[in-house]
Image (tube, rainbow, N blue to C red; front, top):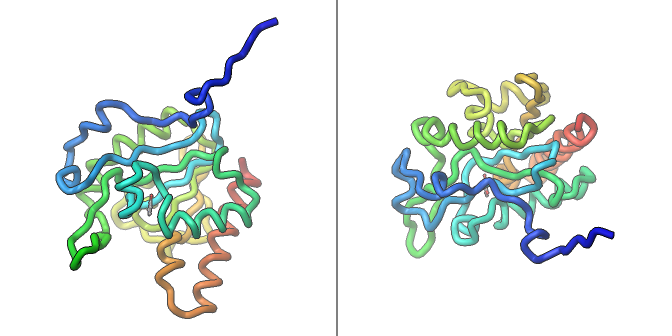
Length: 204
Ligand code: URA
């Protein structure tokens, strides 16, 4: 019979990395970032998650959502019954934007200019992946996906937006869940993320 050899490489999830993306200087964020952080996940993933931009740990690892926000995301995915290895995870902006604060690198929200400059990469990923469902984690992802600088999360929360052959499900960003200090509000924000992810699982 046919021998199928599974190598370490074959077991690696496919990455949408191209040398063009690695070399991107379409905005100035590359100057202060360690590396570009490409999306990750299998080609046949039906669900795509879009975050804002890599954080401190993602910038060092070169992989999205491996830091504190990633832990919240993992908890929400687990609660929604989604296997992280089976979905595609990326960001609207692919370089870490930060400013020094003592020894720490403090996250800065990307400007519209940077969202716009990075949009071609997200468009390319959607074209390649052809996802059925895209979960927009936070306002930056939503602005990029809808190509609408005015789009806000509060306005669109709970809606399902049909775009070409896929459905966009907006929800909170996991970092928002981390930031909220009120315990009840925090739980509510987390549950809203779980609800959106569960909805994605049902639709996929
Ligand atoms: N926040 C994001 O939006 N994306 C990451 O990859 C990590 C934190």
